[in-house]
Length: 480
Image 1 (cartoon, rainbow, N blue to C red):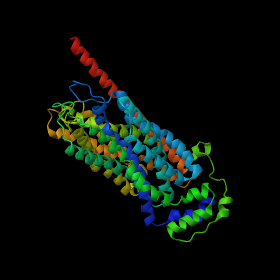
Image 2 (cartoon, helix red, strand yellow):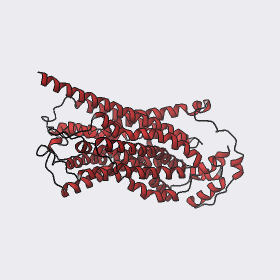
Image 3 (cartoon, rainbow, N blue to C red):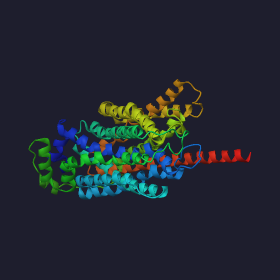
Image 4 (cartoon, rainbow, N blue to C red):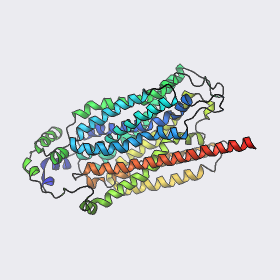
C-alpha cells in the first residue's frame, strides 16, 4: 500500500534508538507525570480539608469530609477526564497532536493554580469552587493522557515501541512519587514553623490558620512541571504519521523527520495524494470489528477492570493506613502532622512498589511479550489483593504483633507492583501502523476512566454504609 511505501514512515519504523527517542519519552512522559500528580495529590489533603472546614465544636475526633463531599472532591476530576478524552481526541485529528497538546497543557496549568486559589466564605463555597476547577483540570488531563501515548507511538520504531510507550506510562509513577515528596516538604516546613498540639490536647489549636496554605500549595505545584514542559512540547515537530496521512502534507512530514532523524528523506507527495483506500475504514465499521475488534475489546476491558481496583485503592489508601495502624489515630496528631504522615506512607509505597512495577514492564515488555506480562500482572495482583482483603477484616491491629502489620502492608505493596504492569500495552502495537491509532487509544483510555469512576463509586458506597452503621450504633447506645 502507499502508506507502507512512504519513505518517511518506513524510516521511523526501522530507525535505530537515538537521542530523539529519549527526548520524546521525557516530553510526552511529563504529561503523564503531571496527570498523576494532579489526580492523586488530592488524596493527600482531603483529611486536612475535613479538619479545616468540617470541624464540630466539642467533637471527640477531628472533622472529616462527609461521604458525599469526599466522593465529589476525590472523583470530580475523573468526570472531567471522560469528557476531555472524547473532545480532545476528536480535536486531535482535526488540528493535529501538537496544537491540542499545547492546549491541554495550558488548561492543566490554569486549573492547577485555580484549584489552589479556591475561594469562599464557608465550607460550601470552598469545596464548590475546588470541585469546579478540578473538573476542568480533569478535562485537560483527559486530552493530555491519550495524546501523550499517541505521540510516543507515532515516533517510536517497531523494535522497541512497547518499551518506549511503557516508559511514557512509567512517568506516572514518578508523578505519584513527586506528589508525596512535595507534600512531605511543604508539611514539614509548616510543621516546623507553626508547631501545634495534638487534637486531643487542644482541638482548635491543633489546626493552625496557616494550615489552609498547605493544601493550596500542594495542589498548585501541579502547574510547575506542566509549565516546564510547555516550551519543549512546542518545539517538537508534529508527528509524521499525522502530517502525512491525516493532513496529507508529505513534504512537511519529510522535512520534519529529516531534521529529527538527521537523514535525507524524499517527500513522495504523489503517493499520499494517490493513496489507495485500503485501510480507510472507521473505528466502528464492520471491517474494523473483524480485523481489530477483539484486540480493542481486550485492551479496553482489562484497562477498565484494572482501574476499578487501582484508582480506588490509591485514592482511599490513606484510610487503609489508619486501619492497619501504620499512622496514628487522628486525634493524637495535629492537622499538619497528619498530612506529613499520610504523604510519607504514600511516598514509601510509590518508591518501593509503584515505580519499580512500571520500570519492570519497561525492561521486559519487549522480551517476554505483552500478553505474558499482562497475565503475570493480573495474576499476582489478584493473589495479593485476595490475601490483603482476607487478612484485614479478621485482625485487631492494636493487639497483633508488628509482623502482622508488615504482612498486610507487604500485600498492599505487591498488589501495587503487580498492578502497574500496564495491560493496555498488550495489543496496542497492533494499532500502531493504522490511521486510527489515536482514536483506538482514546476509546481504550475512555473505558479505563469509566473503570476509575466505578471504583470510586464503590468506595463511596462502602464509606457511606460505614458512616450509617456508626450512626445507628450511636443511636442504639443512646436509646439503650
